[in-house]
Length: 177
Image 1 (cartoon, rainbow, N blue to C red):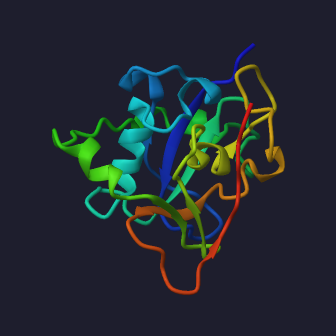
Image 2 (cartoon, rainbow, N blue to C red; image 1 turned 30 degrees about the vertical axis):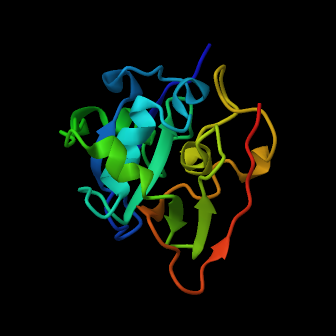
Image 3 (cartoon, rainbow, N blue to C red; image 1 turned 120 degrees about the vertical axis):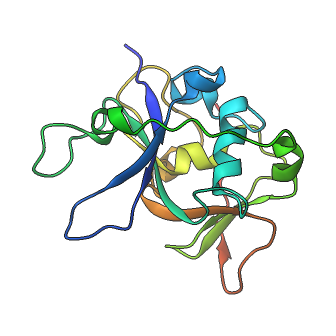
């Protein structure tokens, strides 16, 4: 069976508990729910996520995770983030110019690890893979080059920016199927 994913925006972690601020589902934006069905540069869903994480978006510099429905349960709970986020669905209203706006934001910035990824010349969107949890447990998951990096940014503070912050290092990741 195939694994479905949602994007979960998390609040700052307190007392070892997670608080879900919002969740977004790919099919609400015309894309498939499996990771490899929606994780492409300039896809509808990826453009929405980029916009909400850019300086003009509601979730600029937020903790983010691509939560799979086969991912492990949260500590001391009997559900995973995918299931826990059911009542937190968010449908952003984007300005008509959002596609033009996000084109100028070339860098995916991880503020937790002080790393960045340049989206230039990418086909598979690194953000979806770097922040996913549960990859490898179902059909439609990513099985390709640099698979070891998948999930390495999950739950970190992420933004989409025009410039690289000082003293951040580039994470080189080419994802190809």
